[in-house]
Image (cartoon, rainbow, N blue to C red; front, side):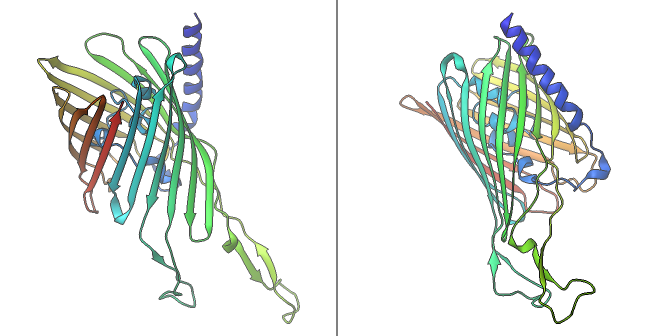
Length: 339
């Protein structure tokens, strides 16, 4: 009875928050901030086109669906590097450990860095001689637990920080996810609400300007006025996914995945992907992402993985490649340690 009430309570929370996430339309494209929240991490999920809501497990699930973190038996650490678009580098590190019946707890950090940018002004359009390097960070605390032998729940509490020259914005965001395994025909279902949270705002010393008050004495000293930036919302979404274990025999395993993503500030997306595994050691993956949005930059994805044991530790190396319109194709590298 207690577990049933937990499931009902968590479901009510998720459905209540879904109302705000479904509020967007095509006219709102490009109006959300904190886009670093949308950048995926983990080569396995990326290689399957991002269709990883129902089938992803371990530390990579922190991004895709935190309910999958509950599948960790001991401790897992992951490190990921991405050569993203427009010379942006994305680095991700995570560790999660099982704490008995309490559940699984994880910590992670995603940091975006880019090359220096020259500071320009009206007086110096070619540059003032100063440079700055924007930086965007997401730090997450994850909790995940199996509510029953078929249902798992997970949540992320995320702290966001954005730094552009001398201005900063910080805020909080939350993810809530479920997985459900009916123990029927190799199916698993997943649902997640991502990037739900309050609005953010930039602040910093450059919002102070010196002006002459209208109608005042032109010889009087200027007055320092502090302006304020407008707020911006987070790029929330609701995602529903399914994983189907097509083959699992004679050391061969084939899993097919699909995800439907309803975005608050973008057109909806459909993602499909699959993974072939041999002897739980060699993996081949592929996927595709589709949206009706004009100039959608995603598309075909491919990847591979290798896993082996060193003593009691299992090491996994994953690589993925993603086709990208208008930019150089993206590449992702991930190392995982399971012990």
